[in-house]
Amino acid sequence: MCGAKAGGPSTEGVTLDNESVVQGTVTRGGEPVAGAYVRLLDGGGEFTAEVPTSATGQFRFYAAPGRWTLRTLAPSSAAVDRSVVAAKGSVVEVAVSLD
Image (cartoon, rainbow, N blue to C red; front, side):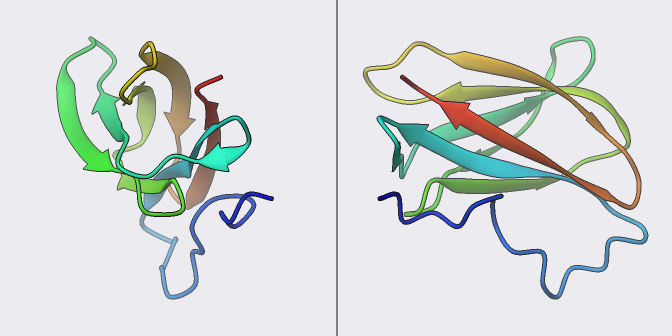
């Protein structure tokens, strides 16, 4: 069984009133992928930020409201893109499977 918490990282302690959060978990074969890189690309495809996944395959961005692309990169896997729309005061949960 995957050790990652369902739904991505906890938002306990995060004040969402003024934040747009994009977060999730990267898995392969149902198991978390540690050390993958998740990139945040703006509406024009330009690089904005990048974070490594945690030991439980989780990642989080605080993004401006709007349309974004998440690009996940990991060894022995093709890049995986996911489109998301971030909104002020909300959390967008993204599950990325490298299968």
